[in-house]
Length: 118
Image (cartoon, rainbow, N blue to C red):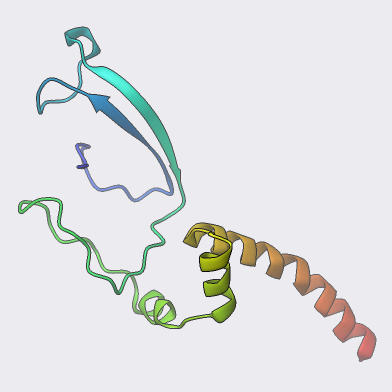
């Protein structure tokens, strides 16, 4: 898969289209090219920034590295996250979103307990 757009993608949402074409040029439905699927991508890239990325072509510039904080946080392993990924077969974005929701629900309760104890 290659980026055939006018520039890099820096937005959190975009559409990928998969075409069956007769040549390497942009798809043309009038020439018999077939749209197989349109995929909507939500969110930023959550892959581990410490792993090497495959190069799509020799002409492409190297991808921008994430900030140093993101690289350091990806080095830390959390046993509960690993358990959910391996035993419950959750993907990385599922683990991230579900734990964010759990934290969002737990924080008001913990805050009320802290205020009550005080």
